[in-house]
Amino acid sequence: MKKTISLLSDNDRCELLQILSESFPDPKSELVFNNPYELLCAVILSAQATDESVNRVTPKLFSLAPTPLKMVELGVDGISSIVRTIGLWRAKSKNIYEMSKILLEKYESEVPSSYDELISLPGVGSKTAKVVMNVAFGLPTIAVDTHIFRVCNRTGLCPGKNAKEVEDNIVPLIDERFLLKAHHLLLLHGRYVCKARSPLCGECRIRELCRKRI
Image 1 (tube, rainbow, N blue to C red):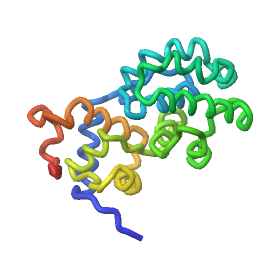
Image 2 (image 1 turned 30 degrees about the horizontal axis):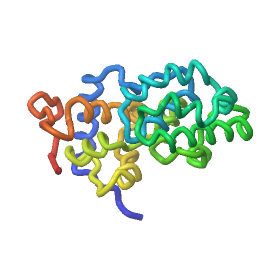
Image 3 (image 1 turned 60 degrees about the horizontal axis):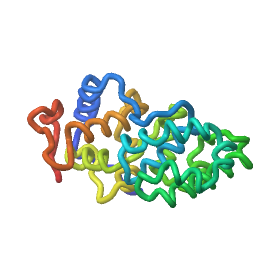
């Protein structure tokens, strides 16, 4: 088995996450949703799109189709007419329709909480499944998006060649007390401080721990 490697010591990793906990005392998803089903739909829509763009269309979508049954009744064309301002809207509309149909027929309209069941749904990959597991069901998982991938490599917390490599290795590196919120701590830090272009290093509270690998 490949050894999990971090460029930070156990103490440094804990300090980094403690500082981020103080910087973001209430870390949570910036997607707007009311239940696991709405979260799942929103995360599917958010692939290669901003949370802001998703939040602009979901109020109307969820008012018309707050359940898998209503979403199936709305149909692919109905979904498409609402979400067409979002990138890849055709594929996402079809996936949400097919996913809703499966939830209705196989899961009594409930979103499953297990990784294997979630990734079996149309439009749901590893990242989406782990976001839903963490946010909707409070499970200790970390989905790795571009923000988290960037932070993990720059800081040395969990270097990896791609998002999957980081995702496969990161959980054992996180102290148990931070596991439930580590996803959003790292994501928010990447979104607002450790930006892809012009990172705010001068304002960064973890800069003394950062290895700036990329």
